[in-house]
Image (cartoon, rainbow, N blue to C red; front, side):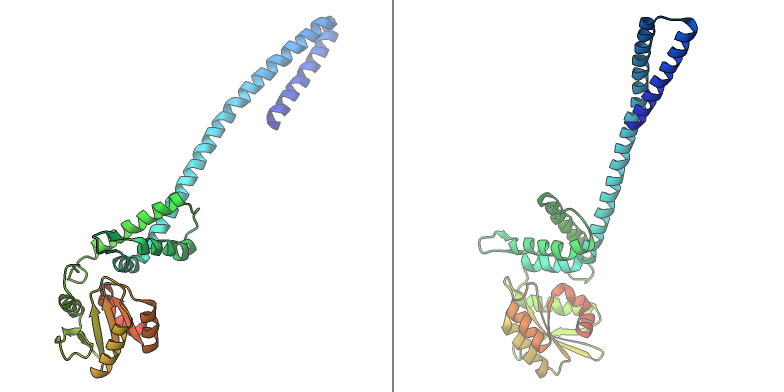
Amino acid sequence: MSENSNSISSAILGIIIIIVIISAVFDIGAMASIQVLVGSIIFIVVVVVLIKSIPADERTIREAEADKRRRQTRQEHENKKIKFVIKAHAKALSIKRSQLVYIDTYGLEKKVKWVNEIDYFIDNVLKKEVEFIDSSAYREKLHNVIENCINEYNSENVDSTGHEYNDDIDPYEYEHFCASVLTKHGWKAQATQASGDQGADVIAEKGDLKVALQCKKYSQPVGNKAVQEVFAAKGWANATHAAVVSNASYTPSAHQLAGKLGVHLLHHDQLSDLESVVLWS
């Protein structure tokens, strides 16, 4: 705006000077000089405004397009970073989903705890890694992205153990499923007999490690009893470590007791990493 004003002012000043000179040289009357002056000023103003407005509109369009491209680039970068963080935690999220989503006695899928877990992940993990403007609509989008990343992870790793879990297997079959997964990953593992196991459903050995495991196929969180039993089984089997394995989650009191006794609480998807779990966690 100031650039246009300066141009117009300069043009008007130039016109005045020219008209004054012409009037003095050719003795043009005052009224005629004023008419020439006014007409010239109007003409110059219109021309200057038109000339200046065309590039300004083009600049506005170019700036708007550049701003749009910058926002798109930022959004693409943000989306990539969000997916990177989610994929880094895909295994843990997959385990949580399988633990917290279940079918109730009426045949209805219950997802409330899982939805809360997703929100917890967004608030305590994702937001610390990626800056984004949170909103109910954007959060709903993030829920879908997380679900898709988990599905991709599960598709890519469906055969990673060589054994696919099935919700329809019974507790006895679940014990053999856990033993077969451990065998696949280099453990000497076998399900114990139904009686005389003293709380150990599977005994797994690898090098100097010997782990007593109790395997619980549950539809509800596993409680203290399983922790107490496998701890006793550890002593009975002269094992170096003890763990409870389940398709479900664990109660707060089970976590508290397990922490005191040094018992590992696992989901069966963690069996492929059992050696790392017992050595480093």
